[in-house]
Each structure stands twice: as structure tokens, then as C-alpha cells.
Length: 427
Ligand SMILES: CC(=O)N[C@H]1[C@@H](OP(=O)(O)OP(=O)(O)OC[C@H]2O[C@@H](n3ccc(=O)[nH]c3=O)[C@H](O)[C@@H]2O)O[C@H](CO)[C@@H](O)[C@@H]1O[C@H](C)C(=O)N[C@@H](C)C(=O)N[C@H](CCC(=O)O)C(=O)O
Ligand SMILES: Nc1ncnc2c1ncn2[C@@H]1O[C@H](COP(=O)(O)OP(=O)(O)OP(=O)(O)O)[C@@H](O)[C@H]1O
Ligand SMILES: N[C@H](CCC[C@H](N)C(=O)O)C(=O)O
Ligand SMILES: [Mg+2]
Image 1 (spheres, rainbow, N blue to C red):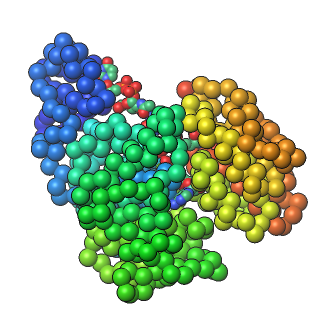
Image 2 (cartoon, rainbow, N blue to C red):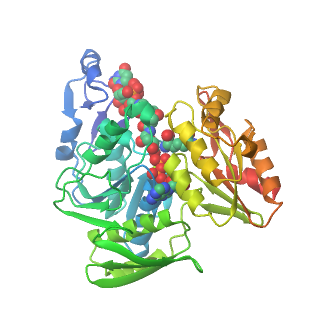
């Protein structure tokens, strides 16, 4: 990765250096420092000191971490800020956007350090006042965000994911919490009991526990209607997004914007209605039969989605990613068997793993085998689910795990596959 700015060339790759370039030393590449010198490099800077050379002080960075809801919350903040007339950049799982325009497609949820700087500089060049970014647990552990001064840090929740990488749940929790252990301005989900944060400059939000931004009532008639209080004043917003978890996401977004702007909360709440949601997250593809594509790929994410449809007969299709947390697989199976009347277990992104073995891991969590169909071909699995869905108007078909991913990753190849397109073929 190279960043060229102010007539200087910064690189984080020892194989890219020359005598004029500056090798940016980070946790990830420190072992290649000698290699950089051997390749003729004479100039070095530690990534955490980049901010001394690259002035980012004119933009406010909002970082969102949490197991689930980062993309949705970040997109909601972005949408509200744009609606209020600000210039804003958004960086996350779905790519990099400036003022509603897509600049870069899917890469990492949180890019490597130098790319973060490059994106922020680009946002500043485009007049942005805010840079909204998702912060993954990998990024915190690998210090991809070191050297960034956050105007606001948000924690959505801590459940479980990525234990292939972090090894134990405690280590994962510690990594997430390390993001909110300093004195920066923070917004914390008060209903998440695993959150351990520095209370200095922290505000909270929630539905259950006392919080700065506290939901007092909600209903799901004609959209989602929410009333909440901040200190002793009441506010309300309406949204098209479904599910209690989306109340958390939107409330977090409303509170975030309240914390970083001078706009009134009433104005902010008004802008919520224009946020249409994120593609591939609780996206209704068809209403008869009701078919929804969602990105839930953790046991907790799935539970949240299923609970949003507990008045319906659930038919679900899902798999689990290969080369990712193996232990979450039977838990995903178990959650599905608790809520669904029919479960079609299929392939997600197998990567370098055998899809049949991933499916076996998931099926270990499904006790009631009468509910279970195994169909390794995801396109076939979706077709079967839609056919079943058509049999009863109370059915809902929930296709989970890949959201709007436009491909299936098999080995290291990305083969075109869109859950939404597959659904559209069969309705
Ligand atoms: C497991 C993992 O996270 N791996 C990351 C890790 O890879 P790595 O340690 O193997 O590093 P590397 O690619 O060999 O290079 C490390 C550094 O050394 C430099 N280098 C390398 C070789 C050399 O000869 N000289 C040299 O200077 C490279 O330029 C680079 O700066 O460091 C790399 C660069 O810092 C990352 O790109 C890479 O992410 C890989 C691609 C990845 O797939 N990561 C996923 C798991 C990930 O991070 N996902 C999260 C969470 C998703 C979510 O929940 O939303 C994300 O943020 O996307
Ligand atoms: N606040 C929440 N609590 C629990 N589950 C949620 C929440 N928000 C979203 N989800 C579920 O998690 C899925 C992923 O949501 P989203 O893309 O917003 O999260 P993310 O944290 O960005 O995920 P990733 O780390 O994979 O990028 C959704 O499709 C939904 O099923
Ligand atoms: N950002 C997450 C997304 C997982 C999506 C799921 N489809 C999978 O491939 O496991 C990850 O890379 O772990
Ligand atoms: Mg995301």
C-alpha cells in the first residue's frame, strides 16, 4: 500500500521502498524493517506518528465497534449527517463512500493503517467534516487504527465472533473493550453487560437499563416507532427498519449525531425516516411469499433476526464461513432449531475448507432432524426454501449469512453469487 501526499511517498511494504520513500512501521510489518533498509530505504516513521506529518485535525472521526450492527449503525450515522447537510465519508464492510458516492468496493471492514490515513486525507480533500468508520476486532488487535484521534467511539454490543483469530471469548471481549478504555468521547450500549469502559466522557444508550438515551416505548405498527428520553426530555423517531436490534442501531446513530453536532435532537430524529437501511441487512426481497436476505452470521445475529419473526413460521437457509470461528457453527445450528420450523443448511463462503464438513459442524447443533434439509449448493438451497415458503401465507423465508455479498468465496476465488438475485429467479 502506498500513500502519495505532499510530494512524499509513504509505503507499508518493504518490497515497495526506494531511497526517497518513507517506510511506515506498524505492528504488522515491523519484522520487515531490516528488509526495507536492505532495499535502500532511508526514511522511516512509526505509524502512530503519522498524524504529526499528515494533519487530520480538520475532520471528525467516528469509530464504531461491536460484534453486530457496525455496518448498520455507521450507515445510519452517515445518512443522518448527510441529511443534515454535512459532507461525510463512510468506510466499512461494504466499501468506502464519500458524500453518497462509492469510491472503493469491498475490502476489509477496517483497512490497514496507511489506507485509513489515505481514505481520511481523501475525505478531507473532498470537504468532508466527518469520517464514519467501522472498527473490527482484528483492526484493534493489529493496531490498524493506531494514530487516529477519534472524536467519538461507539460500542454496539459484544457477543461472539472471530474466535478462530482471538482464540478465547475473554480475549475477544478484552480486545473490544480496549477500544473504549481511554478518555475519548464514547457512546456505549448500556444493555450489554460485557462492555467495560472508561466512564470519563462516556454517554450510554439502551432499552432496558438506565441510560443517557433510553427507550421508553416502541411499536411496530406502520414501521418502527420509538420514544426515548435524554435526561428529562422525550423524543421520538420512526423508521422502516425491522427488528428490536435495529432500534439499538438507530438509537446509537441518533445519539452519536447528537454528540458530535450542534443540531437539535428533534432535527436529528426527523432525519431518521430517510434512512432506508443497508442492502443485504433485513432486506425484504419479496412480500408474497415473505423473503428476507440478511447478513446474520453469528449465533446472536441469527437469534435477533429470528426473534423479529417469532409470530411467523420460519424457514431458514444458512451456512457458515470457512476459515472462520468453527465453534460458532453448532451454536448457529442450535439457534436455528430453537426458532425455525424448517432449516436448510447450505454453504456460505467455504474458502479453503470442505463445505460438507462445515455443514456437519452446524448440524451437530440441530437436535430435531425432522426440520433439517442439507443442500450444499446455495442456489438450490434458496430455490428449495422459496418453494416451501409459497405453501403457507404465514411462512417467512430468512436467507442468512451473506447479505449483499456479490460472490461466494471458494478457495481464494470469488465466484459470482447473489442471494437476492437467486431469490428473484424463483418468485
Ligand atoms: C488474519 C489477518 O487479519 N491478516 C491480516 C494481516 O496479515 P499478515 O499478518 O499475514 O500480513 P501480511 O499480509 O503478510 O503483511 C503484513 C505487513 O507487512 C508488509 N510486508 C509483507 C511482506 C514483505 O515482504 N514486506 C512487507 O513489508 C505488508 O505490506 C503489510 O503491511 O495483516 C495484513 C496487513 O496488515 C492484513 O491485510 C491481513 O488481513 C487479511 C487479508 C484478512 O483477511 N483479514 C480478515 C480476517 C479481517 O481482518 N477481517 C476483519 C473483520 C471483519 C468483520 O468482522 O467485519 C476486517 O477488518 O475486515
Ligand atoms: N445491534 C445488533 N444486535 C444484534 N444483531 C444485529 C445488530 N445489528 C445487526 N445485527 C445482525 O447482524 C447482521 C450484520 O449487521 P451489520 O452488517 O450491521 O453488522 P457488522 O457488525 O458490520 O457485521 P460485520 O462485522 O460482519 O461487518 C445483521 O444482518 C443482523 O442480522
Ligand atoms: N466480516 C465477516 C463477514 C462474514 C460473512 C460470512 N458470509 C462469512 O464469509 O463468514 C468476516 O469476514 O468474518
Ligand atoms: Mg460490518
